[in-house]
Length: 85
Image 1 (cartoon, rainbow, N blue to C red):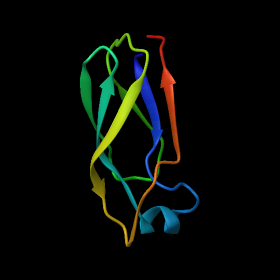
Image 2 (cartoon, rainbow, N blue to C red):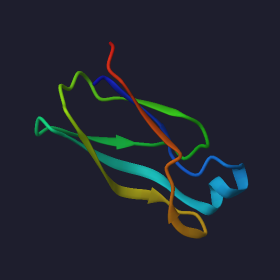
Image 3 (cartoon, rainbow, N blue to C red):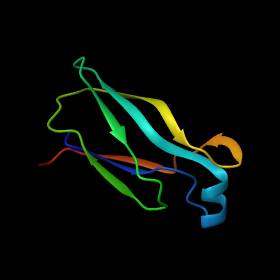
Image 4 (cartoon, rainbow, N blue to C red):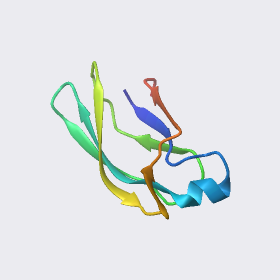
């Protein structure tokens, strides 16, 4: 695994995106025992985060901080994985 692509928040409309909590920091934990702290800018745009070259069978995400909206829900619209350098 080399990169993780995200849409951190509810990408339905700018108003709804702003109302919901959005990802600020996530701990990505890998099956090989390593982890990465991933930080997100607070903008309604897709974000591609490099994790180096990790050989893993699974990834566990733990939300450690959010950008607050007026609604208490925390949204993630999409996540995808890239494994080629």
